[in-house]
Amino acid sequence: MIRMSIVIIVLLGLAMLLGPVLANNPGYVMIVVAGITIEATFVGLMLVLLGVGFAWWGLWWLLKRLFHLPRISFSFLRSRKERRARQALQQGVLAFARQDWQNAHQLFEIAKSEPLWDKARLTMASYSALRAGEMARANQRAAELDPDDADTSLLLADLWLFQGDAVKAVAAVAPQIALAPKNQPLGRCYLAALQQAGQWQTLLEQVPTAIKHQWFSKNQWAQYRYQLYPQAISALAQQGLFDEQASYWQNLSAKERKSVAATLGKVWALALSGQVESAEKLLLETLALADLPLAWRVIQQIPLGRSVLQLRKQIQHWLRDHSNNAYLYAMLSYCATQEGEAEQAAASWQKALQYQPELLAIGSSVKG
Image (tube, rainbow, N blue to C red):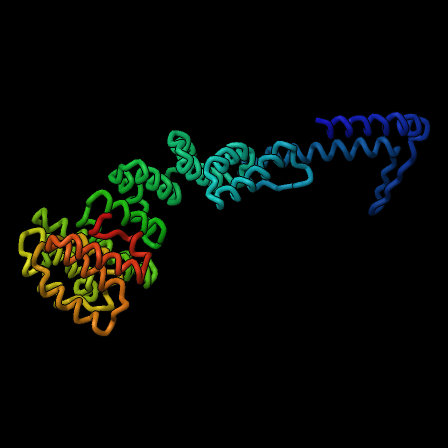
């Protein structure tokens, strides 16, 4: 407001100074182009140019509305409100990067006057409102986006997953995956939604697509196998639906079907069905020392009970040459827990943490 007042005062001052001069001496302008002569006073010429400028602006405004022409940006002519919106957008992005969710979603609300960034602003506004605990505001911002856009589907799926409704998350992503199977973030979200929804058969059916379109990097997929196959196979087996001759399994490559992760799923299924001796035997036939860092997360959930004698012997054999391997001590702790030896389990677990404290974040079968 102060700046506007200064501009008005300056214009009035110039008008008072130059007005009488131009009135008494209007000047004379003559333009000759290709035999055409144009004569006018200086003031008259300025008025004509001003009128032509307004006519051109009106024509451009009309054409832009009729044919949806792109917007031409003149930053130096932006209104104070637009500059404030752009500044708020910039500060909101920085707050988003700092995970300052409360401040971020408030700044994105201020940035409403920046239409060029509507998609990014609304998406980040929804995510930051979600993290700030403003669930209604997060849903409201998501509803303002194009429902047919793949990024919108990804956002909606994330919102539904956060609210614990994985079935709706699957419904939000599935149509877009069919249209854009190469969309890696969308593909990863789809698998996560299927997993949380317990749609294990559909999840296994999507594995060839995930591998073909590289939804995960090679290293990521090697780790993700242990999240996917053990849960899917054991869950399907409990429901009486796991069949190695079924198309959803046969369509997988031999490498996937014979992977350690897939075998752990079968071990888990055998243990849950009461065939613990067969489960331990299959585990020992498959498991190698190099598999333990990834396999440990799954093994600690498999209820082998007292059928861990051979497994314990194998672990102790490996310890002779690898006495500082934290995962071997974690496995000893698991075996002791299965056999009901709480003190020995706790001692082995403390030994594992001594060599690798990060195991505490993974969790263990030992409490306290």
